[in-house]
Amino acid sequence: MAIPCDLFPLLFLFFFSLNHLIHHSSASYSIGVNYGTVADNLPSPSQVATFLKTQTTIDRVKIFDANPDILRAFSNSSIYVTVTVGNGDVPSLAKLPAAQSWVASNIVPFYPQTKINRIAVGNEILATSDKSLIAHLLPAMKALKQALDLANVTGIQVSTPHSLGILSASEPPSSGRFRRGYDRAIFAPILEYHRQTKSPFLINPYPFFGFTARTLNYALFRPNGGVFDNVTGFNYTNMFDAQLDAIYSAMKKLGYEDVDIVVAETGWPSVGDPNQPDVNLENALSYNGNLVKHVNSGKGTPLMPNRTFETYLFSLFNENLKPSTSERNFGLFNPDLTPVYNVDILRNKQAMGPSPATAPGPTSTPATTQGPTPTPAGDSGRKWCVPKPGTTDEALQANMDYVCSKGVDCKPIQDGGPCFNPNTVRSHASYAMNAYYQAFGRHDFDCDFNHSGVLTTTDPSYQTCTYPFQDLNLKLEQSVAVGLMNCCMTRLFYSLASCMIGIQFFSSLI
Image 1 (cartoon, rainbow, N blue to C red):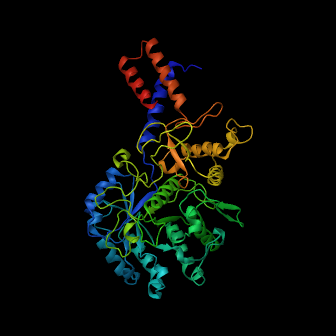
Image 2 (cartoon, rainbow, N blue to C red; image 1 turned 180 degrees about the horizontal axis):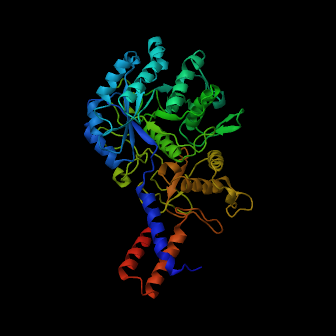
Image 3 (cartoon, rainbow, N blue to C red; image 1 turned 180 degrees about the vertical axis):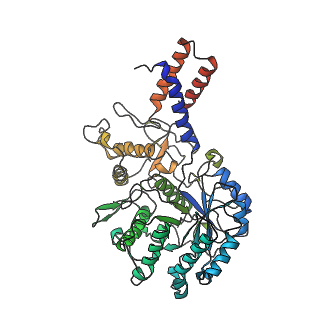
């Protein structure tokens, strides 16, 4: 059906707006980063602020103190900053005069020019088992909130981060419960404070600290059989969701499921000691890359669906003065501001160069019947995801089970579907893996599948089976472009300049 010429101005505006939204809006509005400074080789705070603002999609940072140089560096930027009160300062800040003095020194001189949005009071204080710190934690939070109010500083929340050690039970997630003795005496009052002040409960979930060799894929968001919760009937396919839902279950048992949850820290190191074989660049990329995609999907968790959790990756830099090898290598960036690996947070992705050689998306040519050639990272050509040669049927079946459980349309490979024949595990897995890759963002790591997938530039479609590819609006854009050219040739009121601009724009889309 031909598109009336009079509709082309509206269609042009629609596609231009859509294209602008897709290519110029940030894909990581919910992703922040922890900016630690335990190093002697880091760039200046002003360099860091400029880099984050101009080169990344990061729009919030969390620092582990109230460093005035850092706060000044982020002034007049669009980046939100969470500052932290050191654990040792918590007891004194439980008194209002001390809290007022702290706010006057560390907040008032910088706010609102610097977009301070939260004060973290200590870090994982309940895990210290220090009775004095624990006893003074909530009073310090309340005193700081009162000090902010008295200083007429609005819009800054006060909270405190917790480790998952606050739980006495977490598996399955529905069994989540705060430690006995802490639940009613400590957490109920803290959660009541959060409810009254509309501030979030901060948690530091680290699948890195909870995985075993058996649960590695579960921790890294890779295909796996999942963990079934008999109480809720939900099957968990990643540990991150399970940890968040365990916290939610513990909060719900106390009647505070309405309090928001913010992920204050999470990450995976890229280098470890010889006795840490699963601490490597590839696994760090898998965890953080899949985490960013998962958080920004807005899917939430089984118990908290359709939610996008504010999440802070740990950490911005590798910090060379930390004690152990893995602790020194949690960073997304090196001190010279080059990426350690690509988790899709840089604005200019071409400037990143290819992903590391050990990352998903291998560049060797697979020996398949079509002879596909994988496209290097950053290439703008068409790509499909297919199984690597030599991958076992067992692994491919696991890939299929994982993909189809994620809501990907697997009907074409079911009996009677256009891609059912040949009726082999490899053929069905090939279609399913590509469908997942196309549907979930077309990042290289979307075709990893625990090292069993590879990207190709040769269309694997055959006879009645068409493999999905790229933009669902492609045919419509082509129709609009052709129609526009016809209208430009037949309707005199279209100016030559307008036609040339429109044709050039739609040509860039297709």
